[in-house]
Length: 539
Image (cartoon, rainbow, N blue to C red; front, side, top):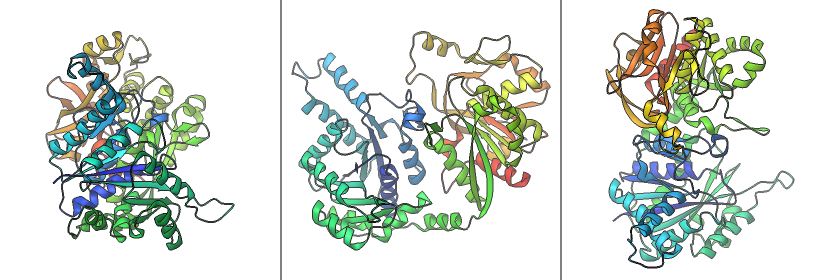
């Protein structure tokens, strides 16, 4: 019998609901159950594709091409499962579907209302996910915080599911437990209010995960239990950790997996987290530092630095570094700074390797091109991702082929459009069809033998995920090859360039796709492994 676990947030957003959901999924999977997660975003956007990374964080792309919230990436990394569009739901999708059904007379002339029609649509999507994935457990993370208007309908749908099948649904509240500096004491009142707000909706939490700087002590657990009407043993400590992959092991110290089974009236089971424990041991023993620079533009928001815009890149670097027992020291390089202060390029010599990731818009482009040129000339290991590959081609055209003004038509009309838009993409742009219309999802890439890419993959054909509109312009290909650029990976269906690399360089490779989306803590991506191998060697 399929069971549903809803994970909701209390007090504030950004406290780690996604990581908690992924960790619970991993624990249940380690006990031999089949698990599938779902992220619910309360936004009216149909998907995450048109959202600003500085506001929403990274856009993660699944193999079937839907642009999603970064939590889908967290689920994939923890569970080592490839997820699909059914694992992601937004308010926009739900309302869009309900309106289409109404227009098609699928409600038979009834007055279409928020309840029950919108909530029925939500329930249908959750239940359908379990059927499609044939899962024992469906874990549903409801975005936002309890008490907000935006996610109220999703909570109402969850309440209805509990009413219909009380023994098959439970709720986990992930709530912030602050320790104000001026008091020096852990305060439970915000969590009490969050639990009460949940009660007002008609939902009683079965578990409360107390997110705090430090582990919850016994007095705090007793207080949360008493005032939130939760069994004391079901108040679980969720302190800050340096290594997020340690969270499942922390939860299992409190026997969370078996407590969940007990709530469902199921027998206890042993977990098998041996491989995960080995990973944590390896991470803790990785003490030699390796300095890697990421040259981007999506990390400054006011006076704060936001890492979420590049979270998959960061995690892929970590996975590869830990494989070689190295501790990554990741430094943000502001692309715009190198446009204003080109003398600062000399500071790049301190890095063992530099990555130029993906992005959109012309801001910081010339700075990135300068950084790529410096890496090429100074023999610093370089990995370009998506836009990073396109700009590596622009830099090569300008400074090796001598084509002044060479550029991508995304940013400028030029005599040398080395990066250009595909005809079908041009039509979409003219029609102002931006959402979900890029080259998205998984595509084949044929690898040439005797190349750096083949050395990394050790196979002729791979499948990688894409998110872009512009491609390398094949009419210039022979000129690049004559001057030493190697096109080591191509899409066999359309002969589109997927991977470029340079000879006589420790590591200079760039991809049109996003390899970071397929990296896992226990299985680092091959290209990141080769990049870090070269960085260690060059250091």
